Length: 305
Ligand code: FDA
Image 1 (cartoon, rainbow, N blue to C red):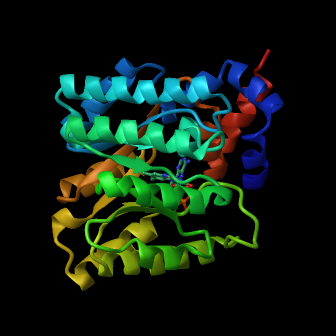
Image 2: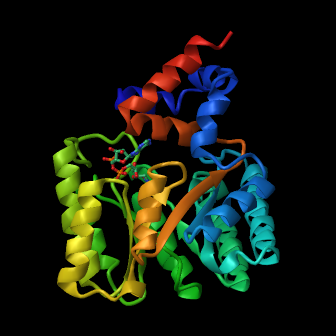
């Protein structure tokens, strides 16, 4: 089912059906903060007031037009201005997909656009994390992160434990000040590059986490998996990590009670909050992660008339 949904996430015909199914909006609301910047700022304020930190994602990916890449970049600049005006910028960073700012069109264009966002984030007193997409873009994305870090050292990278290569990438990215979000990975990847069995992905996550926590960077532990949160807590104690040298991260709408529990226990917890109209691919990845979500999806399809 996971593979079917992830394949569907790239199909235009399925996209049209899902986007227009009446119940889709209801499902979307669980995972997406709303369509506008105002919605994003409102959701951010609520989370920050409840003791959480935020990473905002202006939805959109796989951009095929230069104008669209530019519009996405401008949207991030406006968002960052609004965060400053609302006094929320210090606890809110932004997450950016390079494919949304033109990576597939022209590498240089995507670096220029991402640099503009990084400069605006720096001026706002915050920073950027560059999301990781499918494995065909891993090398290019990590190279661009290195390039951005020359001017903006706090730019975060994302590594996915389902890829065979990731333990070695963690070694490379565990240097002083290196912000690294470790997640399991959300795309449909072939067995030539990625672990297929859940246990193997989880074992890899534990190994990667050890490398990052024993290193000198700032690990961002992005998972809702209770076993991995527990493993992280043990490792944090074992290696003697100070409270302000790492954070937990979870997605908007997923395990909110656990987000609050960790924050109440003194952990920094950052919630990844997507907003905007281009929710289709994001939603399909969230549905694919959990069988229970699929029934909402099927209901959405069934009620499309
Ligand atoms: P797992 O999928 O095993 O879930 C553990 C438990 O969490 C489930 O049993 C359930 O209780 C709950 N849960 C998880 N997903 C759920 C869902 N969709 N709906 C309801 N409950 C759910 N991926 C990527 O490839 N590139 C990226 O840049 C990012 N960025 C990113 C940022 C942040 C902050 C997070 C938390 C995650 C990502 N991801 C990502 C997604 C990540 O790779 C992964 O697909 C999801 O986090 C799900 O994996 P878990 O580690 O939560 O474990």
